[in-house]
Image 1: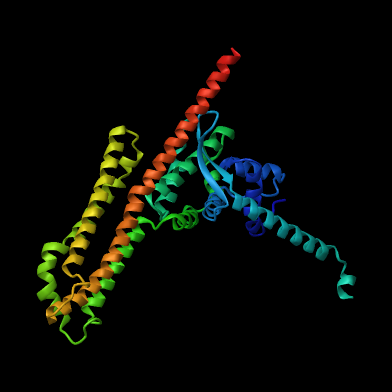
Image 2: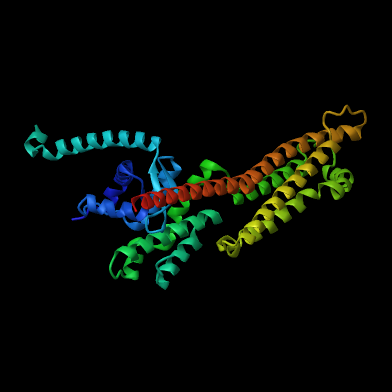
Length: 115
Length: 258
């Protein structure tokens, strides 16, 4: 089962930043990791990934650097910046609160809601 | 390029680039990144279907819009783009014309007549710097952004690009000198006696404003055309040196193992 694209839209920057917080990655690697780590639940379209990365770059959350891979292929690696780490921490807190709120809401029985 | 991409993919990338509304450097960066992405897919996935990949990526026009939006934000954080500078120069020129010909400064005098009788002889001699400068800049820009020059890695072409950048600088400098000359002609600080000189003083203020705005404009052109590519080149060379150093270190490490 895949998550709806609209639902994923708001979480995509946090997902990408959390991956980049571990190590610098290039575009294709990010999309592959996202699918693998989320056990194919989160799949960000390849087309939406690059505009998202450019937006994060514009906001100063990530920084792109051209580097040469082991196989000699040139790759554009994205590194998380200090501002990106700060933003990720904030967003994580918000996400946890939202998760808790939704959990409470969905777990409460209809009787409790009426009372 | 290690992997030869199918025709559909290259056409798809070309369409995105065609619809992207950003400067040539950014277009090249997007093209490079997308090409690398597809190359990675072709290197890692067994028998990928080009049509499916294209469908997965989405509509090229929409993608180009999103890419442009992202890239424009990057540009806005660093400097005004070149087309923005041209837009600004046209706006300033129109504003200047509106102020002078609209007669807001001296409403009791026939301004068009004065412009013709006073400014025109001077303009013929001196202020032709401005149009000449912009014409030169435009021509040079066309040469500078020719894809053939950008895509070639030949060192001669690099020298040519350097020369073009120098010409840009000299054109901008000559325009700046022209503006200073104009300012000197209509010096607002000069103590005037006659009506003619008083009129000239009013024009002096206009020209002072024009001078400041033009100086700002030329500074931006210089920053855009000279400094930004220079910084990029320095960064590129630094990256190259780092890569070379790491390659040497690896070689030394492998030799020491042997």
